[in-house]
Amino acid sequence: MVEDLVGPTDPELSCDECFELLDAYVELELAGADAAAEMPLMRAHLRGCSACRDDHGSLLALLRADPQALT
Amino acid sequence: MPPPLALMGVVRLVAQSDVLSAIVPAVLALAGEPRLAGTMTTDSPGTGVAAGLAGSPDTVSQAWLARLRCPGAERDAAAAELHGVLLRAARFEIRRRQAAFPNLTGADLDDLAWQSADDALMSILRRLGDFRGNSRFTTWACKFAIVEAGAKVRRHAWRGREIPLTPAFWPVLADQAPGPHQHAEARDLLEALREEIERLTPRQRQVFAAIALNDVPIDVLADRLNTTRGALYKALYDARRNLKAALAARGLGSAGEWR
Image 1: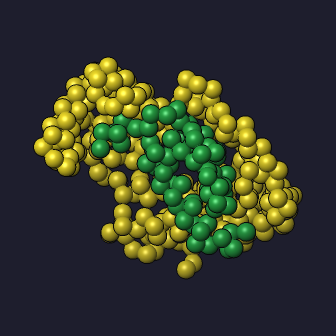
Image 2: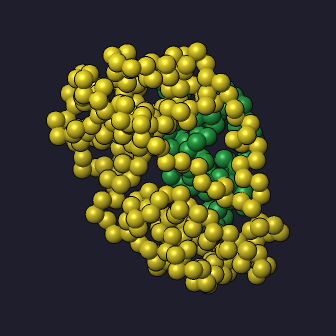
């Protein structure tokens, strides 16, 4: 809907900052922490940027699917 | 599957340790471009995010760093091992996005995975000093492979396609409204949005139309416009901010919704 077109209302990170924090954000999620609450600017950017949202979803899925192989 | 002969990526040369030994120091000597740009807010940039994430690497991560930094065969072996991890990550990402490649064979897709792993390894070796221990080293490394593979998938899927840069094609949003009243509200909101889009700067309008209205991947658009993903997202952010302010000024949206 229109909300998606005009993006999040909260302040958010840039794509570059999102990249820098992506690994830490995903590990927080895997540890069961409320990553979105702990990193609200990250959450806002992931809502607004589909490419970063894809990257986040893939890294999270990879680590969930193959956690031991990547240590 | 053996690596494609057509590619001349770094790690295809890993077995030839003399070649890798020549490449890795050169990569490490390169000054990496800083990736951090401005936070999209007028508030304190990154408050509560980066500042709170100053960790120290765990012992496994420290071992990775030590091996990748030491000279000679040990570094070559570590780089080859890391490439294996990156290749698994790149293949995983490409499998997830495989629907975007209806005409490509498995060999073509694996070729993309090798290219992604090669490029990711180059970036990682250049940026080892940026690893702060906020995650496991392999998690940090895999994000490079995921991002490389994702970008290559999107670029490949859009190769040869025209990039729509005008707001000519509108999503059928109004039709999704549940009832006549909501349908009218949605129509009014869309009409207001359409008018406000015309008031954006040409650059903002172009970026908003391509990314928000027509779902053009931001890295594909960055390639076509010869700019960066970060610069485009800043333009998109500014366009959205202006649109939200304009809609709020018209009294559209619930209180604070667009602010």
